[in-house]
Image (cartoon, rainbow, N blue to C red; front, top):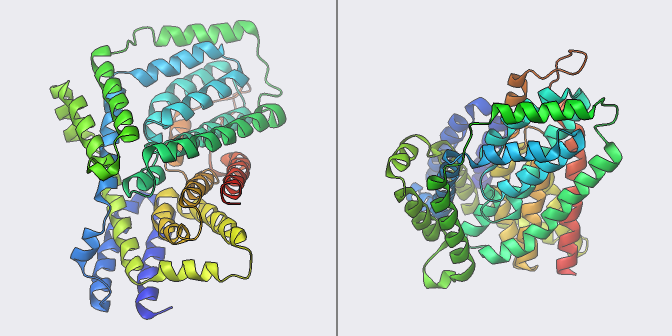
Length: 442
C-alpha cells in the first residue's frame, strides 16, 4: 500500500470506527475527518478539494432530501397513525398476529419512506398495544427485533426505500425498474423465511397467557385512544398522486433523455409542496434532513479521496487474483460486505463497498453484483442493533414506554436482547443474497 493510500485510508477507517463507537458525535467526527481528507489529498497530490467536491453524487443527496420531505407531507396527513391503529384492530391484540401484521405493514411502508419515519410513527401505537396486552420480555424482544429487520428489508426492496438503494439509483448503477424487479422478490422471500422461522420455530408467544376478553379490551382501549385521529385527505391525496406520477416517470422515462431520477424527484416533491404552501414552508424550514445530507457529504468526500489513490481498484484486482473460482470471489465479497456493514452500519459501508462493486461489475453481470451488495448490506444492518440507522431510535422509544410483564418486571430492549433476532435475520438475508447472486451469474 502506497503512502497516500495508507494515509487517506486510515482517516476513513478511523472516522467510520469512531462514528460507530460514538454515535452522539458522528456528524462532528465525519465532518472533521472529511476536511482532513481534503487537506491530505491536496498535500499528497492525489486530488484537490474542487475535484473531490465535483465527484460528490449530489443527485443522491437531492433524492434523499426530496423523499424525506415527501415523507413529512404524508406524516402531516396522519396516514401512518391510521395504518398502525388499523393493524392493531385487525390483529385483535393476538401476540402472533401483532408481530405478523406490523412486520408486513412496516415492510410495505419502508419501501416508500425512510425507516426512521416509519418507526417513529408506527412504534408508539405498537408500544401502547404491547402494554395493554401484557406481554413478556421474550415476546417483546422478538417482536421489536423483527419489526426492525422488516424495515431494513422494505427499504432494500425499492430504489427509494433506503440509502444503499438510493445510491444505486442516483449514481446510475441501476435503473428504477431494473432494481425494483430484481430486489423486491428476494427481500419478500427473506421476510417470509424470517417470519416463518420466528412464528413456527422460535414462537415468542409461547407461554403467554391471553384470553379473548383481554384481547377485546386491548382493542377497545386502542380505538378509544385514537378515536379522534382522522386522515387529512387534502394533504394526503396530492402527495399520493404525485408519488404515483414520480414512480411512473422513474419507470418509463429513460435517463438518456436528460430527465434524470433526481430531477423527477425534485419536480415531483416541489409540486406536492405547492398544494399546501403554508405546510410546505414550515417543512422546508424545519424538517429538511440536513444532518443526513451533511453526514453523507462527509462520507462521499472521504471515499472519493481514497478512490483517487487507486485503492479500491487494487482491492478489486486483488480479489480477482485469489486462487478460487470466480463465483467464490463474488461470494467472499458479499460475506465481507455483510460483516463490514454489521460493524460500521449501512451508510458508510455502502459508500465504500460500491467502489469495489463497480470494479466487479465489469467481470460479472452488473445487476447481480449490485443487488447482491444491497442485500448483503441489508443483512449486515440487521445483524446488530447498532448497525441499523433506526436501531438506537427503536431502543430509546422502547425504554421510554416503560413496558412491564405480567409480574411487574420492567421489559428492556438492548443490544443483547436484539442479538438472537439479528443472528437469525443475518443468516437468512445473507443466504438469500448469495443464492440470488449464484442463480443470476451461473
